[in-house]
Length: 372
Image 1 (cartoon, rainbow, N blue to C red):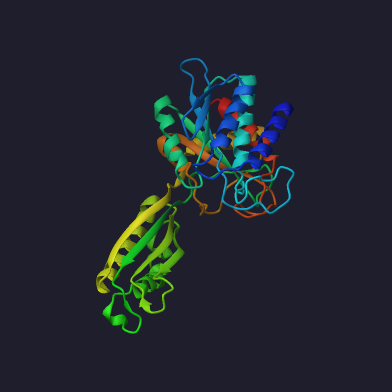
Image 2: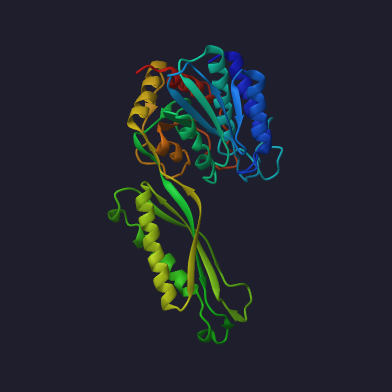
């Protein structure tokens, strides 16, 4: 990687880190990245509202390859001292999306300078943390007839600069599910007159482990209790409403949906037993991220050519990633780059290692120019 481009990318990463913005609020971030590309490259830059892309166009008939990076931050205070620390109270880049976008921008600099036989799309995506961004950006794949899509994430706990990639399942699907119950209030001294949802919710919580037993599924399936709210702190009134919020997770989407159906049936049955009204709501949906074998082999080939060691995760990653929308629409692969012995994502002491930028750019460029 060009030294000047690396220095520009590091400075860009630090500036993004100073000005973090949460999902669907990335106004400054998007504008700053667009200005960076307009000022430092000759690429075509296209504004798509909440997100944007840049494109390097090769001759007609060339393969069309896309590379994606996310740029949203998290609602977490930055409590560590950094020379480029967050200037926004309560918000910080504790997942490394500042580094992902700086890496993609640096890759754009390299392609602009060195050229490429293929047409390359650089997708800068909003709202990955909520699972909404890729769902919108993926429209570009069909619009432009993109053949293949790649992306990466940093991975604490693996050797710095080494690549982790799996064929098939890479990261789980997940969704947030809220189960609402409504009964009838009564005086706390005579709870039998009303209909209180607390026992129904308690029985559901106790039954959850039986709904995702490992022997009932071929892949990982999990249900995690996130929040419970029943009644209000009025000690003279028996509770009459309640909500249970859980996160459903599955290596395969169809099995996650099977778990949802089982949970739904249990909730309806208990609502009927206790004379309650019941309905559900969903949020934060992430598809499974499943890599295509041909694209994974390209990642491995690119790494071998660069002398970069590769690993496989022993199991599917439990955390979700909305890149799965892209691998549903086109061939592609999502891989991780080791971040070394640093604290995990979403912790206050996390900070993206700048050295990863070099690895990401080198691997991306090999993938962009790799011959069959």
